[in-house]
Amino acid sequence: MHKLSFKKKVLLVSNFAPPTAGGSPHVLWNLMSCFEPDSYALYTHIKNLSAGDLTKKLPCTYYTYAPAGKGNRFFSPIRQFAALICTVANGVRIIKRENVGVLVGTADRGTALLLTLGLSILTKRPYVLYMLDPYRGNDFPPVRQFFARMLEPIFFKHATTVITTNKSHRALYERQYGKRFRYAILYHASPVPERVPSSVTPLRAPPHTVLYSGSIYGAQDRSIRNLIRAIEAMPELDIKLLLYVPKRMEHMIKAYASHSCVEIHTAAREDIRVVQEKASILFLPLSWVLSEEVLSMAIPGKTPEYLLAGRPILVHAPPQAVISEYAREEGFGYVVDTEEPAALEEGLKKLLTDRAYVETLVAHARATFEEHHRQDMCAAAFKRIVDDARTSS
Image (cartoon, rainbow, N blue to C red; front, side):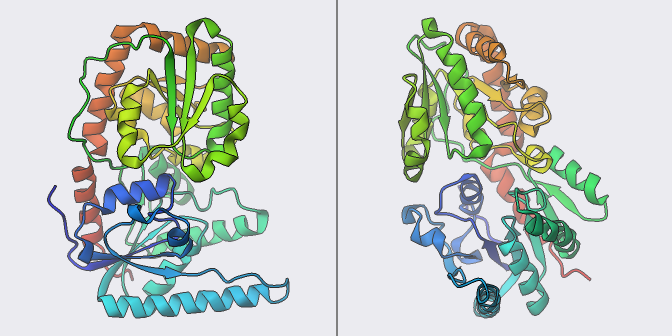
């Protein structure tokens, strides 16, 4: 694939970036790997390099900032403020050294957003916000939530564009803030593999496998446990749940391993597509404990890979979740939007036995990928957004 270049050099400011594991870093890697390494640089938290797999770094220049460190209750705020000043000062030096023309900040717990705004004000560079994660709608303690609600519209006001991840995500911000900010929709990008599975999708013979690949947190846990109960209620179908998770998470999900129907594995990124293609069913879970903001924006980062895997997709999420709406609207997945065990059992049976229905799902999945998630198309759209950035008034 031909690499793209931005008109002006970009500094991507992200607290969670490759090579750390997770949905947002994975999305960033797929998107930014389309660009010439000398057309952008990355300013990120040092933990991404100290805890991540360095083979998954983007090919650009990395700059890092560090945490404030521990201190007693009295000195901790002082240390944090001093660390912020040092981080901003270092960012200004990076912008001058690299001749950066545009900033791109990603949403997190607020660090990268605040840093992007500060650097923009001090250097008079325009910035784009890429809301890969919720800020105002994050699960913060009350005081932090208060500041998130206060600061988010300020961040939006000074951004040239606020990038959302789907139509529901954009509609959420328009309900909250009206249409006074400029929004753009950028679906998660994924490369097209050299070999795309056939659109003719045979049903797998038993033993059947339901596969989930990715990190597991509270956003997935409850739905995964619902699936385990449904599988255990149908021993005659001989179903195994395969969880492919980052190696660092193995110790966090030992509770799943107590169920005989569950197997826990790890796989390299380059091997995961083969694993997905061999599964009977691919599982997309989202739990019932999440905020309106999370439900309105959370299209899991693995979704584009699932769409091209040639396997039927089972979505288990609340009815108001965007992934439920998206799967129904595009027709690429069987949606179970209730926690009634019988509904999951019915979905599993249909996806394991109804070949015509499965082939329809797979065809719609491929069409959805082509329309929204092609890596080259998403990268070109991102380039247009960034190249159009102008210093706000």
